[in-house]
Length: 76
Image (cartoon, one colour):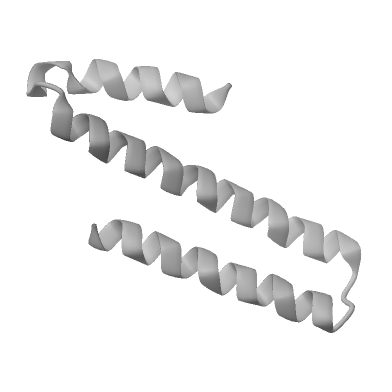
């Protein structure tokens, strides 16, 4: 859970940065670049949460297969 907490903190920091950029009326392209980075970070967080969940509920011998299936699904 510590890893997830770090990811969430990083995302919150990125969002605060975007908020500041909007308040400062920064260039829209710069803002969109940061929004894209946040979306990528959220996708990474989602993947990690899903992987942790499946690690808890699946037998050890099936975890690699489950992880590959999850990755393929996320990449869609």
